[in-house]
Length: 189
Image 1 (cartoon, rainbow, N blue to C red):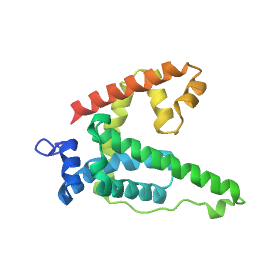
Image 2 (image 1 turned 60 degrees about the horizontal axis):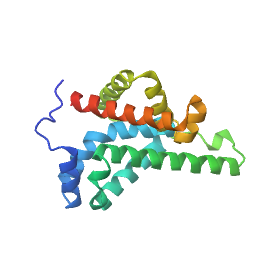
Image 3 (image 1 turned 90 degrees about the horizontal axis):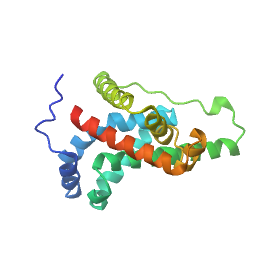
């Protein structure tokens, strides 16, 4: 199924256009990456409503601070994923702290639910399949380190302790895994 992206601008061009106030570039970037970023939020937060909130926060920041994006520090997708992951982990920690401060009554902490658009759901599932396939192609140690970092929100030091590997080795696994993922995901487009 063709995705129609062959004629569309790359992410870097979109970020530059967004910095100049181009709403259509913002819309295209959102449509292109929101399903994957939402999936990251859901994986970390396990709550639909909180995940939606984080996605909105991330894209508000992209719109209002696109001029601060520095392509020398990474690709726009890396920037989006890092921003999303950081916000989701912050929210998770904040929620955990609040739960520890309260009684922890399960009736007051039930996750909210919401219906999704079938087309958006299908696109999200397709993008998840692409990412899962790319993850499956990684070396097992690279995949495990990346999953610990991005899905569990662990720091490099915590991953090293969990995997019982030296910190430098874990950093190498993550870096090599991200390079292979980026390469794999670029060829899938």
